[in-house]
Length: 229
Image (tube, rainbow, N blue to C red):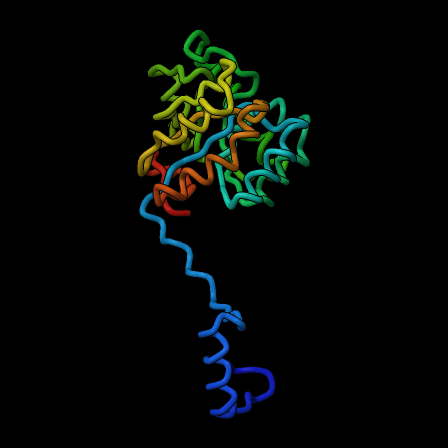
């Protein structure tokens, strides 16, 4: 109901009838409001590892233009190097997670080294304006009981993935789009901040998700699954 602005005047009946007649003969175009966007029938987790970097602004721009949100698993060393990009991630509506400080094979390290990798990244992201992460993606998806012990110390939920885009392995834009097309409700896909083919795939990923009634969601620290933001 209209509540502001000048009152509308009633359209004379003759004017209304004339307009309808013109519309029927095709000499008047009647514009109708666009159909309401379809509701989300499920949510998926788009994730980007290894940022932030000089590539981050282009990635964020592509995501925003296509109405997508994602979780950015940042390395601590890059959060220290590119703090403005961490802020930009948050400003663009993204979520920020921990991806270790130097991207080592965590299970090959001792507990104190693992602790350093994780704790320094928590601090680097927080200082850069990304908040205190609640999610951690271990590099290479490698984990063990010691890694899990340290994660628990910092209240972090470990997030691996359901679908690997293979963008780190030179996958083509078509292949990345096809990988995203395999996502189902609650699932998570692995992608990377630096991959040019992934950047090119984003508009088509958005189109594919919409065609399946899926929306890009957050990742729940409670379940580790994609949920409504």
